[in-house]
Image: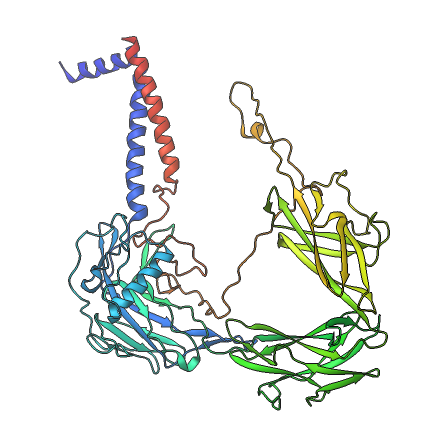
Length: 632
């Protein structure tokens, strides 16, 4: 048969089988998609070969944040030692970055591939023990992650033993097989560099690999800063971008530091109380009469040396049996002593106010200590009298607690509620101001209310407490509150006297769980996104529980300042986690050692979309083939 005949035969075939043309088209489309998928999978993950002409270096910048400085509080740490050891080699094989543990660390059975930030920190501590010989038996739990390397463990140590240095007063030297400090023996080739005036320790002439940065205990003692935690970092550092992946050869890292010495952020709250030593009861000053006393803070037990930066502080009583004052900006890690003073720094044992002589009494002693971990402290003392002074009153403390419940569990919420203290059981006559109960991302809150009950030891007072609105009108469970009000004491009744000078009542709000059943009715056929959207959104009402606002955690006070950006491909500024993006201040990463990115096709189309197109084409192809064969 001639070529012409074959071509005519083929044309005739397509005429007789019209479904074959779409089949041929879809087959070509499917082949194209498969090729695009294969290309995109390889190109998006591919790392270029490491440029051997580029010098590999790592700069470790040591700084700390001084909480005592309002401006320019990031202080460089010069003259401190930083240590560096290579834990794994790095090679690029077929576009894949593979790390292989060196001999000293191979026994740890740690898989560098797929580590997250937490696992990276744990691995760094294990490597630090192995590098310094602190714990020969330290191992990390082996994880069943597939290796991205060649699967072979290298037995060669880093061959770079040359002395390196860069910048003023900065030096690095080979620490292999020498003392690591503190009497420890090195079991790996460790390099040591000393920071310069800018806090930079520079390591040059490095081989490609994963490196461990660490310090010995006490390395930063002069700055009263703890030694930094061991961290892992890759040199060179992989840079993943939409325009293509590359390596950063001059890597920088800024370890986080924490002060170990005292800070000037301590505070001590001093509370003074009126107390009748004869009746063994607390009492109150005359109503609406302001009485002022003074207290001093000292650094010696005999109270002759007033604490630096402090002065006598006034303690003012007004319609209360106690009053408080706070000394702030105190140096931590120190013991202080309190004493009653005359307002001029002179310690006194008694003081006269409005004809009444009060005696200073310290039932809990005069010493109080604050530390950098426990920066706040409190202490109480008394002004006593042998009996109740004229026009003074005995009284007690009523604690009103608001508790929110959802079902039977605590319900964390935010909102303002109110309680009223009434003189009668019917809640018609208020005996004082309405009490505000403000919940701020909490399930309960308590407020102390001072209550007078007389001038004789046998006097007492009975009151009734319930939940009200801001105007003092009691809330009723018959109204549409959205919760049920209940009281811990029957009828809200509280009685205070000399034998029961302190009491508490709890107002409980129980938000009921509501089961909501919904039915989605649709008509047959295709429904657009617009048609399936909810036509009515639930609006929050006053009867619904307030939503909890999430707490936010502040950054550590002593965290080092993040470095400025640098030109792409020149230097890498990194956080301690070796897997983080050098250009991100707060990286979110899975910590994988293998270099990966979001798969895309060559024209930027997401891989998932390409797969979807391929699946649709395959489905149509199968349908067409079925029709063709059904005609035979």
